[in-house]
Length: 435
Image (cartoon, rainbow, N blue to C red; front, side):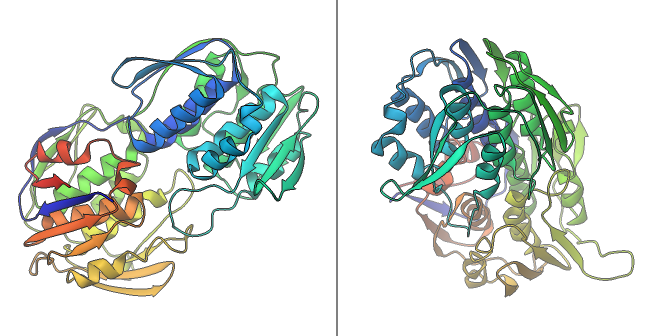
């Protein structure tokens, strides 16, 4: 188990460019299974989860060519369907959350796929009902394989288009169903679809491959199935969550940095939420400049009640950003209620922040009240363990502002979502050592 040793209290300065979006990359890389022709993808983040998904595809027979950093060509013309049904393949899928999105392409193109209970972060229950019911709406049959601990989905013949109302606006569920539907016979209508920028990006790639999709950017997608898809090229957006993490680091350390090439139009409401924490942001072309501030004052609602930050489907606030905003709030002036609606275990890392001196009341598994110190009291260094990607980066942000030397263990969780984060932050003035 590797660790970060962080010497806190150093201000940051300079410029940093975000990596490609992890969540988009996992969808796009899975989509290459839909065609036997080459798909070239640029700006792929070379992080642990993405590398593991690429290795999984290579094990299935996908030919992968790395041209240079972040730019790959995939060709899925000789898929080993027997391996894709093997115990080894299912076991590897169960350990990798992003592998759930190979199910739709495999089912659509080859007529069968195993769907194990997904692994990944320990942040509470993560239902797969939306995925499986969507596939069944398209004509697949589902059986639970007790030996493999996985659902076996099979269609026998080509999937059939259908109209469906998703029980939740699941991003991965929408992606999976969308990829299955593009090769289905007839028309598929998906209502209550997720419409995040990464789903829009997946839709655009599929259209470039020859799919017929209407309603991109809305929660109502209409897909007219085609028999085959062809080659295409695609560039992945910058990672919105990493951009938010950099803003949080600058604010907590009262530092001034520039975040380059952020695709500002795809950030949604995120910049506004940082402004509600009192963080001044300047849009400069497609860059974000975060100026140094002495104090950050949390807004109240117009009636004077405490500000509430709650996650919501796009265009609402991403749940992946709440951990970062919670940490930033510990040094702002004022109070905020953080309401994490989606995952019931994602706020349990706050006990580490309380040990560091933060004033936080954990109301229940979903809500925490943060009472800011207004930088009158610095967080104390400590020894911590990263429970998941987003809590891990939040603890790293806290440690960077704390007095003394902190140690964060289990940083493999952070590496799953952030590429060379220690080296990149050290270039801004941080003091982080990997052990």
